[in-house]
Length: 179
Image (tube, rainbow, N blue to C red):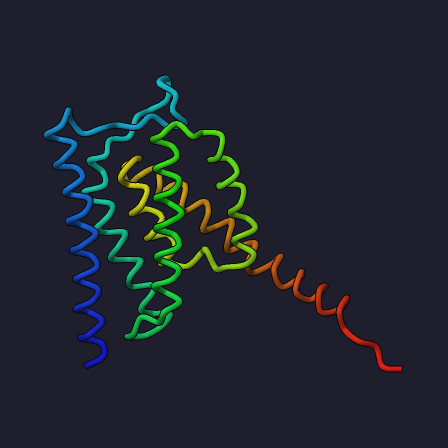
């Protein structure tokens, strides 16, 4: 019963993500054409069409929800919803700032990610999914997936190596000695 309940939720999540990206692509198509984004915003580098999102978002959401299920089982704890929502908010903020020309704030937000990776497990699937969905509005799905994958790798390394070392150092420095 639990597994069937999850399968239904998984299908709903994948369907919602798919409808979201397909609605964005339909809107772009009827309002000037589907956008392509050049890597690093340089015209001399290859462009990636937002059409790739029609394939990438459903596949990515299917795999990421599968990873979530393997980790937590058939229910979605509050921590997963909080992580997804935080990543959605972070990605949406980046997208809005970029669209409104507030480029001076963007580097600080991106540089905050290593610190956030020490505090939170940004390498988890719900963070990547929220980040990609939020940024797909401005950048399509491919570029946020590439950036998000790099953030996942960086977060995993920091959270699994540097964080335990810092915790051990903190524990060593704050322990009380017996007199």
